[in-house]
Length: 459
Image (cartoon, rainbow, N blue to C red; front, side):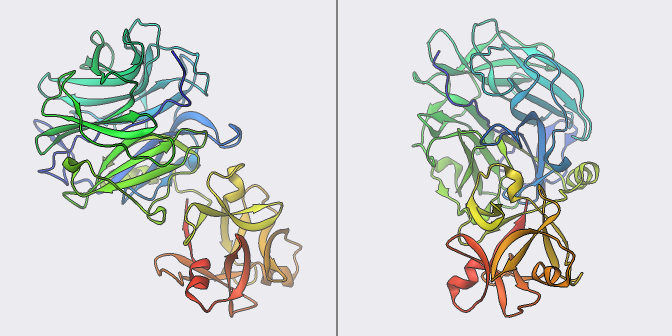
């Protein structure tokens, strides 16, 4: 087997189009109207140093596009068997309304490590995780990468699909069936189009079709079938990609009966997520979303996304808390974030290594508590302040001049009122803006100036 750069992630949303706001779980069990989402992932930084962790991470969102990490972007639980780490986690809401979490048994990027097992946890609410064990899927001398599960109503069992190399000599999508995620049937080939495919992601029961998205030749491609039988899926789309892309994740909008999103991940450490939108899943046509509209969790890799109720969202935030830090995204360069480099304030393209260079604690203004000051997360004695109108990261010397230079008033975004702009405390005609990607304070007059001075405060 020729190892590929990274194993990847997908998602199942068992949501019939006829009931776009409710997830049917089975007789007598129905989840309340879905109005929020939870994402599971692991983290990797470019250098595989700070910001890298192969445990289970969660983030939440109310629009499925902009995400807030839970537990300060630290893992909620970490495997204690196998390779002692996970990749490609996936959350399924079971027929009884509780959750099961499954993941690849692999820590890091040693593609020579072979495990026929996947990690498994149970959870009633994603606040506690119980019953940890590994589930063996096959006896072949190959991996069991990127597992996903869905309910096969015709069989009355859950299907677990994953990427493996079988007798064909290339990666195919395999399937095992289980009732309890403790034992599983013998493996079968679920999808083998005759070429290498990985990262199967399912959308079940959408207007009479079942959809399988997967990675083919560094692009995301869809197949479909009117049944869930192994071997029944036929490719029907051309590939979409942004560079080399893997980990397709289909997400049904909770507020629209027709809108779907497709997430993909570049297969590099600290991969970049890209998203596409479709108004008709059956068309197989996807339009790239502007990066202004979505933000992935910091250092997130190979995600799975599951719908949850508003009360489940609130309970997760209550349990795990909101981040104590923020990131600031540029409005007109949305691939770039505010960071310090050699103690100079600037905007650079994500991923940023170390990631803490782009994390800020927004504290009450040093000169006026109704304003805001930007405290560095990794240099907590230093703040962004202007000097000769350029922003730099300096140690707070306790003077009134420093406090004034480091204080700004947050206003509605000059280019978009739903974003933010920051007016200088002691030069009130000037705003923080970027110029040649370096941050400074300037008077704002033109449309370009307004865009340069507008940022999204998120995570």
